[in-house]
Length: 247
Image (tube, rainbow, N blue to C red; front, side):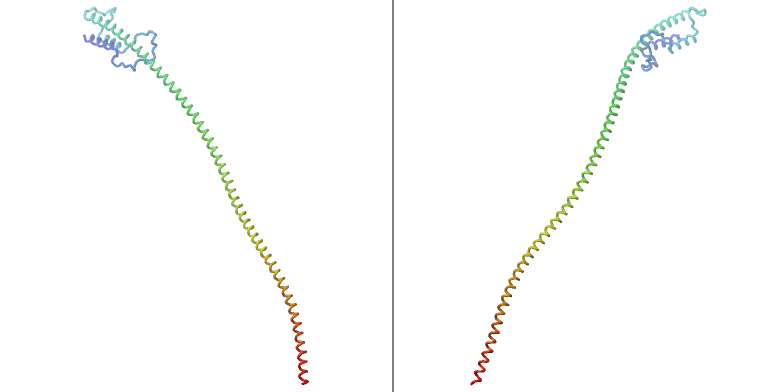
């Protein structure tokens, strides 16, 4: 009776949809769902065989088998449990096939998503690499352009500085030239004034000379008249003296 109870417990565990210790994650994933396969030798069946061996039960065709009512009922119960266990195993296998198919479809979908994401990642990496290359190329190009513009700007600043220096020098030269011209004009004006003054003085000198000449001539006439008057006075004095002596 104890053996029959253990066998009944094993049959009930095998007939349950998820036996003890069975999880959906432990289902095989590499079975061929369409091909028939032999029933698996489970741990419970091995335990049943071991229990039969320990209890001394023999097959009906053996010489030691005794047809006792208790043992016959146990064997019938065992055969019935075995048939139930086979139906349960088939149901379990069907569930396993369905779950395996679902898992396989889910796996394929996930693999497709993974491949798609990997492809997108590669494309994104390629785009990033291309963008990085373009960015570096544009950066180098603009750096060269900035360097060229800076060189041109420096050259333009040097040119403008040189032109400004030349302009200041030319301005100073023009100022100096204007000053020289002004001084030259002043000198010319001064010389002209001096020349005019000289001419005026020469004219005055000439006039003075003429006047002096006239004065000399007048003085000579006056001197002649003076001498004449002196001679006449002397003569008159002599005449007057002789006259006074006659009286």
